[in-house]
Length: 311
Length: 155
Picture 1: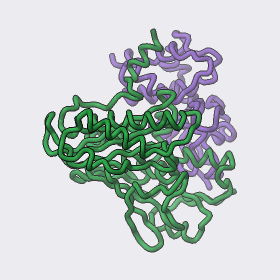
Picture 2: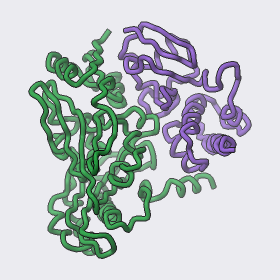
Picture 3: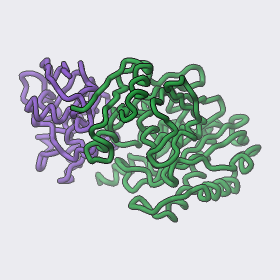
Picture 4: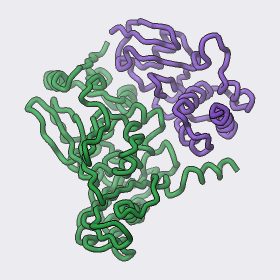
């Protein structure tokens, strides 16, 4: 039988991991169980099951700060009414990850620590300037989620360290959006995933951009922030001309590969298109112009997909 | 380790390898073979069961994580002493099964979707069942069956 340890606290988990460097943390298991069975991960490595640790659980708000426990499930995140309104990009990314069954199991921490280049939750957390709390043998440290993944399936976590929570702020006059391109409209990995976040100076059509961020998933070894947007956008509403410049900047920030989900050229193009679209929706949300609800999946409402299939 | 769970209303205490999957314990130890051994990668949904009111793919659920949980499999969906519930009857009347391999997972996933109050709307049901594949591609009748129950249960 393999080693299996179910600690009751972060302190116990860290102590075990520090003493057993070969041990692997398991939360939802939706990647790890497959990887162990297929030999992509060592099936003999002892498991440290962190789902019994109360302090790692849950989604909660403290004023305008959102606190996401590392073992908060993707389903909990997409179902939180305040996440839908105040951190829309996160809800929009969460609801397209896998299936209901997968989202009931998969966790925020698992998505970030597995560090797939297509990790659905990384771009929205990055545009919200989220900060990860990491507990290790030498205490706690904090790192921007933007710096958490260092390459495909590698992170900044050192021996004995675990991700404990992720926090972000959703101030008034801010809005965000996540859009993605996939081959199928469900149960697919992103060919391109784009998150945008905007802070405006007022509500209404004339609302000028004060700060803006765009992050891209599945088009580079890790999710990446698009550089240089402040100078393109700050001080005015996102006009068509400015959005065109955002598209160009997003396409330029891609280092995509070609695979079954799209060629590098296609991905670079789609990243630009979705960046402008996501940014204008984020602006509409920040400025109070969005009618409410989440953006359509893959550019079309599931209802349209369904009525077509049922006809 | 020893786990103590409730399966379809019955208490079960078993020695298990905690890193083993719920699917292999259900089929191999408890001989509840309605839950299907499908893709083993969480993509097909044929192994769907309900754990503490949430549908999960049992092929990826390690048993060490669910000590004390209440589990419902296809064998327990109808409830004690009943052959079928309204959803299962709707699958029959709508002809929503062809080869039948996906049916247990479909019924279990749909039952939890209905308990969660899914909107009685084809699109919402399709989205909710996106994790259950039917290789016979008989989706329309499955959606019709679930939709009819969603509407009936609202009354």
